[in-house]
Length: 494
Image (cartoon, rainbow, N blue to C red; front, side, top):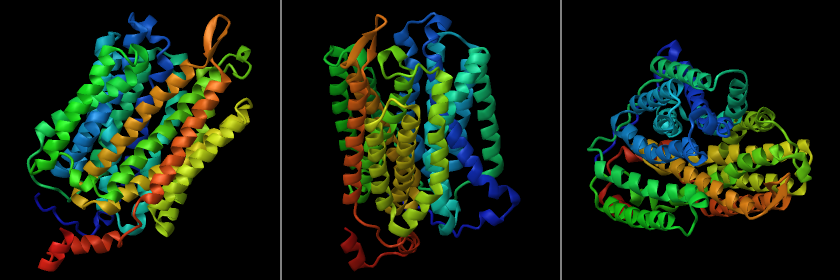
C-alpha cells in the first residue's frame, strides 16, 4: 500500500479569520445531516394521500436514505482519504441539497424515493469531518471538537422531528424540502469558505470492484433487515436477500484481503482495538436508536390504552428535544473523560449510562416527566459512547485511513440502528391489544423493548472493556510512523 503523506504541524487555524469557524461549520453540517434523516418521519402517515402511493411504497422514503447512506459512507470515506476530504465533503453535501430540491419539486413517489437516496450521501459528513479535524487541529483542541462532531447525530435527530412537524402543520409539505435545500446550499457555501482541505492523502487507485461488491452486499443485508417484518421473515425474498448478502460479502471479504489497495483494509479491521470498536459501534447504535423509536410511539399511544399520553407529533418532538440539548451539553465532558481515562473507559461508561436510562424507563413509563428523564439519561450515555468511538479509531489507524475507518464505524452504527428498528417492531407486533378497534402495542411490549435495548447496551459495555488499553500517545506514534523502521522493528511489526 502506498505510503501516506505525512501530517504537517497544524498551522492553518492561525492563517486567517475564516479558519476559526471550521468547527462550528462542520458541526452545523453534521446537525443538518441528522435533521435530514428525520424530517420525513412526521410526514409518513400523510404521504400515501399526498402522493397517491401505497404505505409500503411510502416507507421507502426512509429505507432509501438508510440504504444509500450505509453504502456511500465507507465508499466516500475512502474517496476522501485518496482525493481530499473537503472535496468529497462538498460533494456529499451538494448531493443532499440536490435531493432536497428534487423532493420540493415533485409529488411522484418514485422520484421522491430516488431523491431521498441522493440525500443519503450526507451520512458521510461526520466521518469526513472528524478526519479533517484530526488533520487540522492541535492535540489539545482535537478531543472536544471530535466529541462535538459525534454528538451532532443525536442533536440533529432531536431537532429534526419537532421542526419538521411544525413546518408540515403550518405550511405545504414541499416547504420543508425547500427549507432543507436552502440550509444545504448554505452548508456548501460555508464549507467552501471556512473549511480547509486536509493535506493528508493516501495515493493510489480507487477500488471500484470493492465498492460495487460492498454496495450489493449491504443493500441485500439492510433490505432484508428493514423489510423483514413487512415481507415476512420466512418469505423467499427475505431468505434470498440474506443468502445473497452472505455470499456477496463473503466474496468481497476474500477479495479485499488480496487486493493491493483495498477499499477497506481488513487487516486493520482485524486488530482488536479497531475490530472491537466496530462491534461496540453496532451494539451502541442498536441501543441508541431504540430510545427515539420507542419513546415516540409510546407517548403518542391513545390514553385509552391505559398508559399512552395521546400526544401530537409536535408535542412528541418537544419531548425528545431535551435529549438533544443534553447531548450538546455533555459532549465537552466526554472529551475530558477520554483525555483523563482513555476513550475505551468513556465508551464503557457511556454504554452503562444507556443501560441505566432504560432501567429508568422500565421503572416508570407512565409519567411524562419520568419518560423525559429516562430518555435524557439514554441520550447522555449516547453522547459519551459516540464521542469515544471516533477517538478509539483515531488512535488505532494511520492518519491516511482516518476517514475510511470512521466511515466503517458509522456504517456499523447504521446497521445497528436498522437491526434495532426491526427488533423493536417485532417485539411490539407480538405484544398488542385492541384499543378502539385498532391494534396498539401493550405497555408490556414497550418494557420488553426497553429491556432488550438495555441488555444490548450492557453487551456494548462489556465489549468496550475488552478493547486493549490506550497505547502510546498519537503524536508519538505519528512521529514514529514517519521514521523508517529498522530491520528488527520491521520484523517485530510483522
